[in-house]
Length: 220
Image 1 (tube, rainbow, N blue to C red):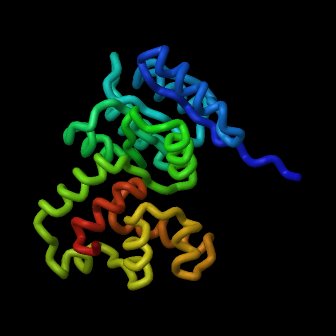
Image 2 (spheres, rainbow, N blue to C red):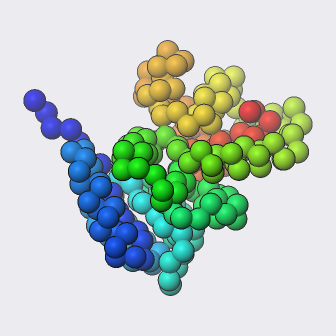
């Protein structure tokens, strides 16, 4: 029987006790492994370059370089990076700055070990995951935004096809490529190609930004 592929996690938190606790929780899971640790954003960038982990658990408030800026710099150099913000803060400023920086998820540190493990798996698989209390704020912000005109999406330099719009709408729900493929009865490889094309056309670095852009374009 083949062994399941390990999901390699980089822990980024300035508190040693927190990192030790997260390591203990993560290593209880047979499919998760801690690839390394970092105490601040600068160390996180260096560690990502050296280790190429499958996912980064990123704290927000840290010395030298905070988690939002570290996320932004990692995503600039490694657009494929999967970063899950794990913090005690649910301030609007941190939420939206973290998502704009390219984070694929935003969790608070009061989650259970199982919720954390499931979140790591979801984000590592290309999905998005936001804590319920945080999601309410995101939805409220979406509702506050002025609706885009019906011609906004059509004004892109290269318009989205009908199928691409359909996939973007499902992607914005936080579904993985496999889930989108099953939902739309497509091959997973076909969905992956569509997602790549969509990100290029709408100028999004990752799936979270794609969901935000979909709202701006009036697609959601």
